[in-house]
Amino acid sequence: MAERACPRCRCVTFDKVCPLCKTETSSDWTGLIVVLNPDESDLAKELNISFPGRYALKVRK
Image (tube, rainbow, N blue to C red; front, side):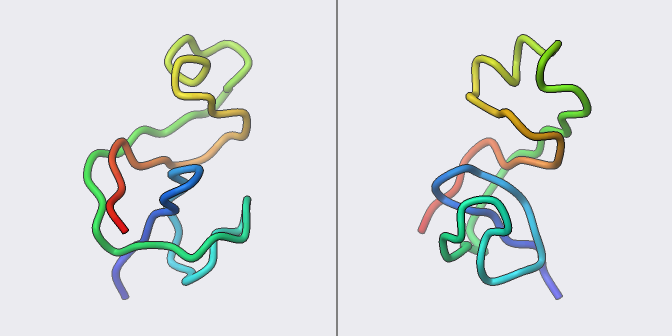
């Protein structure tokens, strides 16, 4: 099963619905960032990421 990404929050998951924001996910995404501590990450703040996890850099619907 291929991983999918949420077009709203960019969370990467295997589910068809995002576990964070309940939006339908897309299989068309590129780039990956892993955030361990969003409170101390400048990149997470720049990308508006507030929960630890794996995120896509670009998602198409």
